[in-house]
Image (cartoon, rainbow, N blue to C red; front, side, top):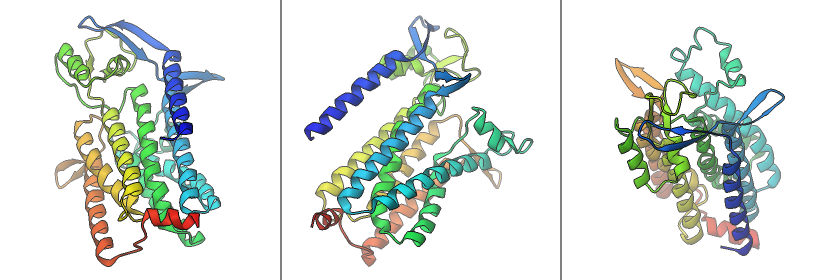
Length: 335
């Protein structure tokens, strides 16, 4: 690791620790007698409006993905103007897609059928409701039309886009941590066993404490019997995406048969596998009812992503579609 990168890493770690120290917390003792500190989901208030850590995490993830994109664009010779213009519009399209996707599958259960305006007002009024698969789908459609207009190398774009999604999810999932949402079910009916499980994962206390969740009311008393230790599915998914990002970065640096654009196919398979199993643990899944069966939307989409990713990868190798390695693109850009 280069010296300047080490300095940035140290800075980020110190900044993260400082940010944790500055968070407002609620303190108490759980039913099992453990001292608990729960970080409040509100970071601060501006003119009477709450600013949530969730929003900060999402924006931070988007920003890091953008910085990453700029660095890669310089390496492989992708026009910065095309990246910046596409990024601005793509973020907007992604957020709209994530919202519409969520609403579509929560139309009845979420009450949108009775009050369709909540599609907009609910999002603005701190109600939330986004789904990453919607963002992926809408951004994919946008990229196609954007490519038709600008005619850039879409394979090069894929090397910024897919890892960018992973970076966004690595950081963005921590917003669910602060909101105490998108979690799994109770680890055990016994509170002490649930905490012991999380401790065996070698998690720090601030994560374990935050997983003491009440499904009935966010501000339930810490010693409320409604609270239990839940599976930190946000962390499972964040860590899974981190592993995937490392695999991409290492593979394209040392493997000559890693072609431009392979990051997209890898993301489809890797994220699909991880999300399929994580979704099985979650309690807030979006349902899909077909022929009397209730399926989990994210699992169905994940299976489709895995099948599509593997199929496209195999077909690409068979027919040698744009067989330009990442290393070749870097070398060509140097010259």
